Image (tube, rainbow over all chains, first blue to last red; front, side, top):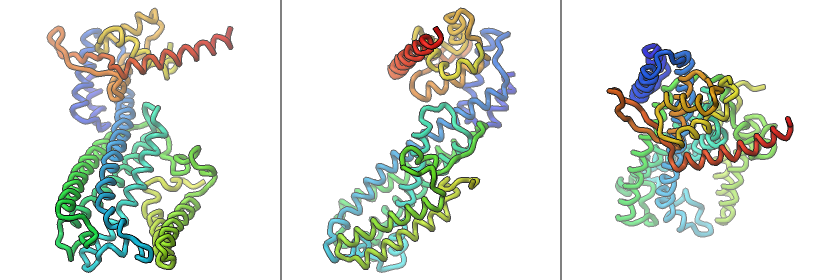
Length: 300
Length: 104
């Protein structure tokens, strides 16, 4: 029975160290009472996989979110000097990103888009974790969804931090952030160090989520979608379809950017940026909507 | 009593047994049987996923000890686990009082 359990635990993707411990505990139990009814090895392996998989996905997502919070602070510290020089009529943050070369333009695009993807995916992962915080095990499909959301958040966060570190270390002509409004040399070094630390920590988060993905839980059930996550939090969430959510979010984000433009006394520029933001939201939904569970897997 | 009937109560029961004295898996099963007068008999292996889960949640800690010439994993309740046990006890008192008042 013990050898069978070991094989089934391995097949379920339980990490080797954990497997050795489980097997040693069962062996000790059997030596205490050779007649003990330990149960079916297949059922036991499934139970371990369901509970361990849930735990690993959950803790990986929470760890990732914590690292992203730190990364957000580093990002804010880097962008704050740029933001603080905005004056009425200055045209907003983007006009202060120096895009004098292809390299700096590419970094600027990453610095604008990747944090948004990371933020949304991270929030989605945490929403699902919080929703099921009291459950010992969640369906395998939901575990995989949490891992996908956490992985996208960590990967996009890592990209942001790498772009930020590069922006701080590259010569002025190649960096979108090293204008006169940016921090001095010590500030650059500190932000580069913080961003590098963020890259390393998020890489570890990705490794941890990868290990969680190997654990093959078997608990039946669908992965659900954004509407399930927001039910009880956002009024009418249960009645909206996926694309309705997307259009509402895109409209809201676009309006926010437009209002920010209006506050900077540049309504036309703000409207253009707002339109671009809304379009980016819709493109993001089209590209990542299924992967991140933003729309029902099987529309009713 | 079937494992299904214990669903939702197993964590509290395990914490109560381990809170009395640090124990390895087999001793936990024996403690459950003894304290329930033999009512709680479940497939003994099912105790281990629960023990591992409670450790992940930091309600239990564990360490290897050597006993009778072999390695044995012994669990003990953490302060966080004692708080969780108190919560289980409170919930149970409310629940059992409500059931009693309906059934009586």
